[in-house]
Image (cartoon, rainbow, N blue to C red; front, side, top):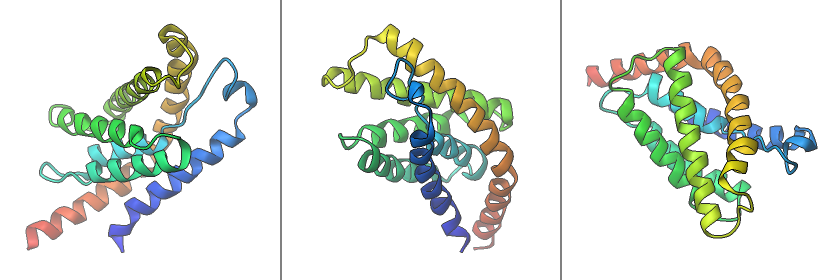
Length: 179
């Protein structure tokens, strides 16, 4: 049963992203300022930091699967979120080897993953002609507000899931050492 916790939580978070986007005031979606919730990416960062062991990469296939799911549900082009989420989590998995897991490192890695994923997504959409804004406009009206809003959510997710993820990771470690 514990193996289902992570995908079910991720599925719930992906669903809540759409609800949150629909509930945002119009000036934050489609106006001058855009707030893009990347809560599933933030939870994937927490999985990479707090759940994955040194030799396990559960967060990477979850990043690919739920990135694709986000592409299917929320975008017109398949593969953008799948690629950016997967590559972001791969980078986080490499960085966590040299950084200790605490709320400040989680905030740093969460912000880095959002910067990477959102900027690469913007570049892909800009190259194919879907993103109508220049880079400075993107930076000021989309990336910075997105970072601020997602940082708040990252702190909330960290406070809620830090202990459960560590507990599940410890039980996973006990299972693998007992085999």
